[in-house]
Length: 313
Image (cartoon, rainbow, N blue to C red; front, side, top):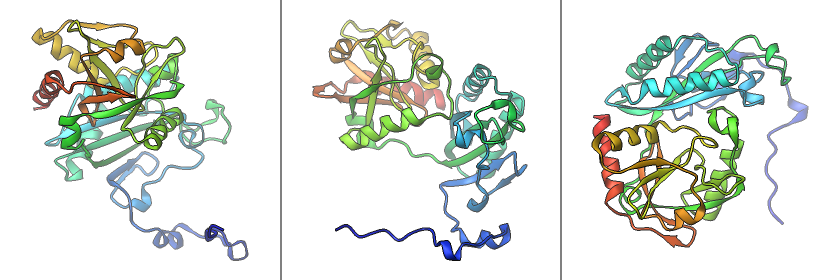
């Protein structure tokens, strides 16, 4: 018989507490080095204050939008691209930004400076705000901002040079506007990542209802075809990735390869010359296998990574 877990709840000793009596009970443990909350209207380094109210729509409905931004040498990479996508996501769900884009940029740059990190990851969340726990967005008290900065966890050298393994997700990915909005409703993405971990591969990639390639849990996928074209899916049922978009601009600017968006089927992926996963924390990672199909980890992956690194400098 498995050993029963100790209960977290002792009904007979349940009591009400105040913030001051509660505060010392929580251990100061959080990956975030600095946090901003428009509810607190302040910055904090105390993990016990890095909280979001439970009645906020972002908590109980996933009703909010977010961006993850990387900074290197305290400079934020693709800042305007991320804020433009944040604005688009908010507009698509009729969510009012509490600050203007220049004010958001100023806030993020201030937090980077105060973080003390030379490189890190910014997670910016815009929530619908507190309300009455119903799905009605008109009952909320107004949108809020939460920002957390953590250390940057880059891919390993082995992954960068030897590639990663990917598999085919067992479910259809998010479709239409849900796929195009970077919302806080990430349960499908969570389940995709869970399946990757359970199967022992680094990433799963999804296919839409028509069998066309979509994306990973938080990453885009692209390939170089046997004909020497850089191909990636239409943004119809995927998120427009800032790294993918920037890489296509760099490839075109240098005239390296023809670039084309198209409907990519599994058969196209299987016969690709090289395959890549792309994202803010990844930059460009070569893929060494998809299910039972192995790929050459060739020169294009290293070339594309070098393009992004030079662009970041």
